[in-house]
Image 1: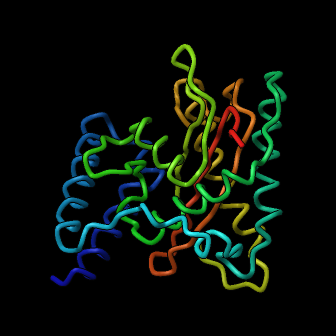
Image 2 (image 1 turned 135 degrees about the vertical axis):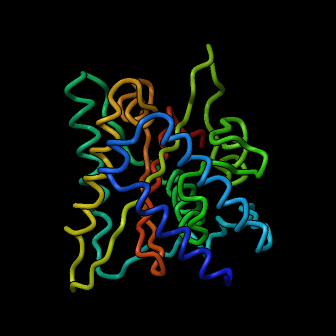
Length: 236
């Protein structure tokens, strides 16, 4: 089997396993097996290609390309997502989030990375040795992009990263509403986690005040990838 066929095969398996009905009915044992299948498959495919690094993915030429889909009003999509965040925060009497331009380049960089290399779609890992979410390594990654946060106090996280993806395909002259529809499914999945979920906690974290959201499309898999970067503050 060629490398491309293996990628396509793994993509089909992954799409099936991540169907809402499958996830909803999966017991804990099945979820463990799904996770193991994912990790083993990804590991095998990674052996077939050169290891990619992310150290140069945020060159200005990468992230200043504003549109990743020419027929989408990204300002409208992002403002809609931001309103969903802030409506929920308002219900809980929490300060509203505001967009911060420094978080734009980091969100663009990671969204592009996971779209280019769809094997990392669920992964926050910045190095091969990381296990899922290594806070310090992610912080170093931000710093390498010249994005800095205040020092942590009392073990309080000063940033958070949420990553999600959805199947997306639209050939209309204006696909803005279609992308908003996909984004709503992403946001709703975060909300369904409720207070025990890390994505939900990031949305309602009281000391967070900054955010940026970015989308990137992998046209081969028809997957749109969404990256949320939250922060207490960004040091100028």
